[in-house]
Image (spheres, rainbow, N blue to C red):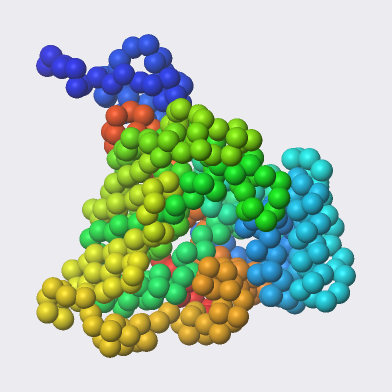
Length: 475
């Protein structure tokens, strides 16, 4: 038998050991770790039929209940209201009475009249009363991210279609709970990844569809957003935009890995048709040293729960490398503490073209073999030639109703339009969990010394079927 050296063994942290159901007091051989990981990511037996391409009877007016109207949810009130009469907000829920009433007052102001909307507030479980309401077709979840999965599962169990802000799951078990419940109840469950509807992202997607990029080989994606100071704010004043109970900072204190993967990853997954002919196969992740949070904490407001804290789990930068079944690679990054201008990178490489965002630039093999970015004239020609038909149709409405450059409005327009017409959602539960599960998988990889961790196959093999994205249908 081959004698193993020290590198053949891994000493588990208490966190990762507990997650795998192992002891942290002894080193284990790598094959033992991988056996446990394979069991952890294996697909359980299906409890219902696949919801790929799920259709329901058309809903002439979609009656909506919103859970969470603090920051993001308050904005969604305006966006959804702009879609009347195709959609109507009939219930608003927030644990805080002031936020629920503020959202209702916004509806009154927008419509110039009093609206008959049921309010739910007063405690953190009151949302359960709302989703049991008979006159709700769709539940919109806009709460702190760790609450998304169990709220979505319960809402589907109450017979509701559900959409949730990002990420939709924070553990492998939560991801399977969402898939199994959607399949068992045959209800729509979609993650509200607004970036998939961005003008730049849909332009690139349309170029991919028209073979401008040739064979896709790799991509780079990220969520780079300097919000360090904002995470430390602890305030009940809605004008501050504070995160409810500092939930984002609590994640940094407790977790390794990528905490917010889907804004950058979602569009890339669509470019590569992940779940529609390709899939994420495995990832390798590592965190940088943590410095920014503990250096800032002594200078943060003294009333916050993390004032002068010396230790945070999450490094300043989280890096993950993802390999797909077709051999493509994706570099995915997460950093919200470095003084670095906002970027999702949005880089895509192929045999015929390369794009890089922030600012958007394109190079083509047929133009000087890609040695230079296209000049302004040629770039503009490409933007006009390959503008996605959704933006051709909806650009004026998107600019009028706003929301992250109009992408929020287009997201909700498509969502409501598909429900009105009884069409499948542009993105399904398998997309949401496949993109979101990067968070727990990257956490495991970091804690296990940056070893490869495989993705669960939430589609149970159906990803192999080449399907056209619904983003090109019924426009």
